[in-house]
Length: 341
Image 1 (cartoon, one colour):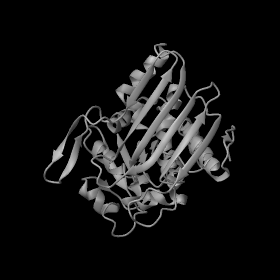
Image 2 (image 1 turned 30 degrees about the vertical axis):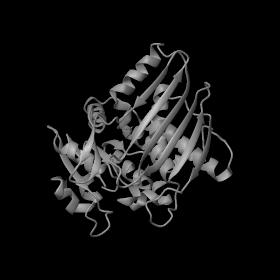
Image 3 (image 1 turned 90 degrees about the vertical axis):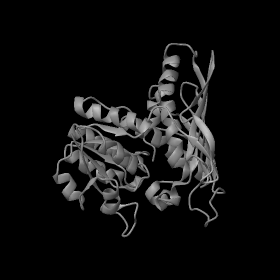
Image 4 (image 1 turned 135 degrees about the vertical axis):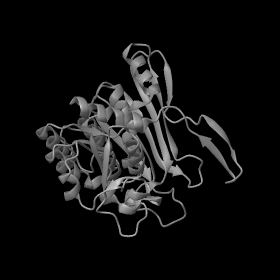
């Protein structure tokens, strides 16, 4: 199977390249023609440092007719690449958030449906065995009905290495766009795709690393109400300093009628002190969620089935983010409709 990674703009691009490069039966090709000159984290130099085949233009890479592509460009540039991939007959795994506008997300979904190719949104936390157990417990009635969810997705500021994350046009926002969607997707899975009814948000841009004040929010709280009565709260921030021993984490507390369940997607399994760096050190363990997500995507490509989470899942979570920004603008709760502006 020929798989292409399109753009190295996203911080996850290197992870996907390493995972695909080392898989049997995968011919990996890459391209990043929009890379700034002399950026060591982008372009041909970066691909060669990872041992990945590289071509210079989008025309060249699509001429090679990849079976599948992974889109890791800036958020606002997803639509262009997804539409080109669909037109070439390639299945698509697209980084989150799916787009920066509902119109772009819908166009991407429609393009893939017309072409008969799959569109998957990159939400790796869905593939945590602990989350699978949580879904099973909810489905079999062990928790009773779900009443509320509180989730926190706190991490370091990705704009330190990728400045576009703090560009409102390219990223669609700041920490809310970057981190709200992961929790929203997990709730989406627990509620079998129930679209949120109302969103209220508060945010600030107090957190920084000593540089100039960012143009986007660095922390916020988003409250989401669902038609069935579930209320979810999301704590999303770029709050971890550069010298923190891990990039961040994601955890949820789910309150059911019969039980309360706490879920931690990235627990530190081994802690200690690194004398070489003079810092605390945490060694992660367990399942590689990115690898599990890629396996789902590649299996869907091989079998022709619909991947999960699909483009519609990505659209539902994007609507929550767009409503959160509208709430920030108005200071009021925002009701979601079938056609959010």
